[in-house]
Amino acid sequence: MRVLVVDDEERLAAAVRLGLEAEGIAVDVANNGVEGLWRARENSYDAIVLDIMMPGMSGYRVCQTLRDEGDWTPVLMLTAKDGEWDEVEALDTGADDYLTKPFSSAVLLARLRALVRRGARERPVVLEAGDLTVDPASRTVHRGGQPIDLTSREFAVLDFLIRRKGEVVSKTEVLSNVWDDDFDGDPNIVEVYVRHLRNKIDRPFGRDSIETVRGAGYRLDAHGGRDARA
Image 1 (cartoon, rainbow, N blue to C red):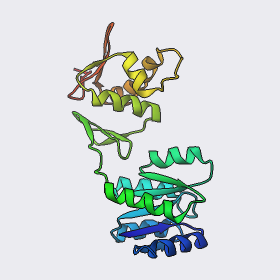
Image 2 (cartoon, helix red, strand yellow):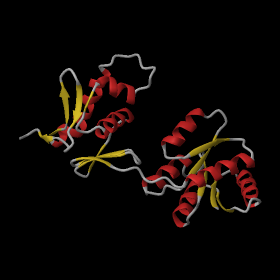
Image 3 (cartoon, one colour):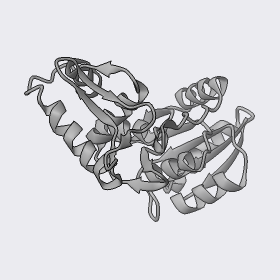
Image 4 (cartoon, rainbow, N blue to C red):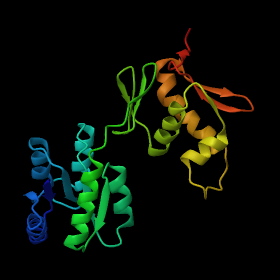
């Protein structure tokens, strides 16, 4: 096994290196995010141990950049104690697992072995409806090759609709898949986000891809929508 450890705490990184090498694992160390990204690009690793808070480039950015470039080497992110939102963001940016500081060498080794057994994930398939594309890995949206900027919630609604393209989905289905189970607000919030999406992915391009099916819900046209100007 060959592992890259990226952490600006040099003493911690050195201790991790010694512990892993004692188990017969080859270890490279980088003490900042920029160097870590360079090493990850230049070499092949079975896993990457990546700290979050580092000078120059955070662990989040390193992980996101690798994923955007199609590198799905397993990443174990090191988070701060009680860093609940650190853990959430780590997983959202493409990390495979996280470990809270301080940790024991035995636990780190066990997590790494589990990651390596699972192997690198395949890049998620880009979802398409005509010339409308949604990339779940990089969380980007394009229409005819032109990028479209969406909020996180807008992206989630579109992601759900395009996965069910050609099918009628109800407001309830959208709510249960995009909002959490504790949501007790107005279900018409779905209408608001559908309107936002139409204003971003359709109207600027003269398209009409999201259809309202009265009494039933919404349907995203499988072919990306008819030309609304026709």
